[in-house]
Amino acid sequence: MYETIRVEKLERKVIVSLNRPDAVNAMNPQMIEELAHCFENLKEDTTLQLLVLRGEGRVFSAGGDIRAMAGGNEELISPDIMNTVKRLVLAFYDLPMITVGVVHGAAAGLGYSLALSCDIVIAEQSSKLAMNFIGIGLIPDGGGHFFMKQRVGPVKAKQMIWQGEMLNGEQALALGLIDYNVEDGTADAAADQVIGKFLGAPILAMIASKKILHDATRAELEQVLDAEAAGQMRMRQTKDHEEGLRAFLGKRAPHFLGN
Image (cartoon, rainbow, N blue to C red; front, side, top):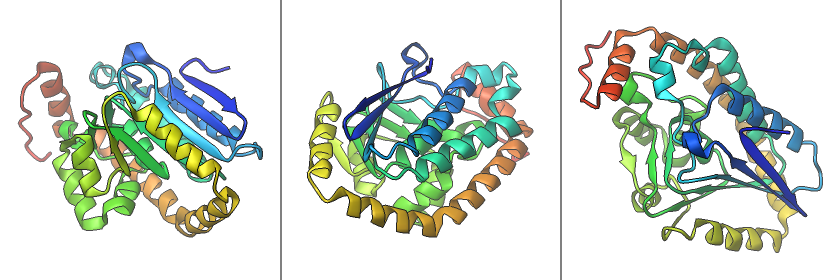
């Protein structure tokens, strides 16, 4: 049914795998649309109580395709694609199930925003976690501002977004961005242990508590997604964004001028 993701239902849980390993699971328009469609449909499946989100291949997700962006692919940041990102994030936030993100390798940009939106985040020690939009003159999207704020508070979230620093599993755990830092190669096994505990617990009560908390903050998330979309469209037109792309492709430090 899907080309860029894989969906496996196993009794009460579902595993959704980002499945563009040859492209380091970069989130192109097709993947974003397929994820939105997938989560919208999973919401209606009352047999499922737990979702695992993971990536195939060497990484969880390297985020957006910067090379395609530098090549002038306007589809990567457009009103249509930002609306699809909004659908994806809200559908995921509304899922009546516990969500567990399993990160290995890189989780960057939009991929990192999606990982942070999970109820539980497990990352391997050598993972490279980065809200690195600032490096190419953009702002976080996919609810990145909202989920960073939920995890670390508004002041720290603001500073971390500005810095765009790459973190390993230990550093991310110390900051409260993830919930488990595990040895390399053990993320899936660690996830199985966490999942087993949830499935052996009164999970209906847990899901009910999740719904209460998410319903109380959903309007804020929707507002943030709208603001991110508008801001991203503005940033796409700046000279600093153009310089960030050139510097990335040229493997050099960018020279930003604030315009």
